[in-house]
Amino acid sequence: MTTENIHTELPVEEHPLPPFLPPHARLLMLGSFPPQQKRWCMNFYYPNYINDMWRIMGLLFHNDRNHFVDEQARCFRKESIVEFLQEKGIALYDTACAVRRLQDNASDKFLEVVTPTDLPALLAQIPQCTAVVTTGQKATDTLCDTFRIKQPSLGNSAPFETDGRSMSLYRMPSSSRAYPLKLERKADFYRKMMEETGLL
Image 1 (spheres, rainbow, N blue to C red):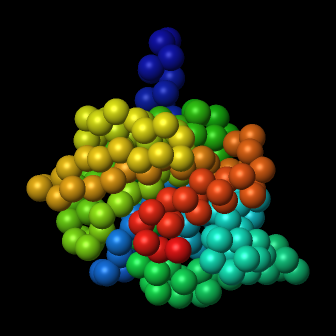
Image 2 (cartoon, rainbow, N blue to C red; image 1 turned 90 degrees about the horizontal axis):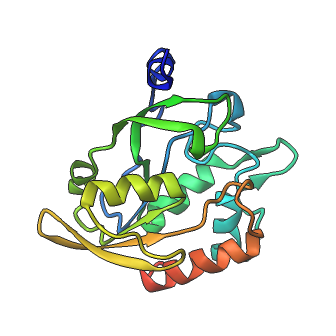
């Protein structure tokens, strides 16, 4: 049996969350795909308690890495996060709508994209959006394949077009702790991007 045949016998996992799209969003942040639900501490994006996305945002916008963290309950403050995203005009989704997990973990390296997200259709729903951020390598690969653009270097941006709109793609380091960079250094990359997009 070939490796390909083995993979097709694995279950296909559909995306468990709807896109989070504030109608006035100016920035769309795209990950690859949520972790397995057993790793969730809330029913929202970046739900793994050991993922640092919401600590990065707390550090950038409130100078407090734990602003969105409930340390006692070991979870994130979903209502505060949603309010923050709506206020700032930040949309969230992922570059895959369906995947196979080739191993029992959350690593992008072992995700097989079965159905890529229809990114032009997603962006059509947020017409004020001018920038897209990919928060990991798999997401960057998928987006660049979709729009046939060359990947920017880490922390930088590249222009692209969709339906006549001029956009910028920002490539950010993963907020996963598996990515070997201190939280504060990751926050520096995100700070530069947020400043350039006028959100900070």
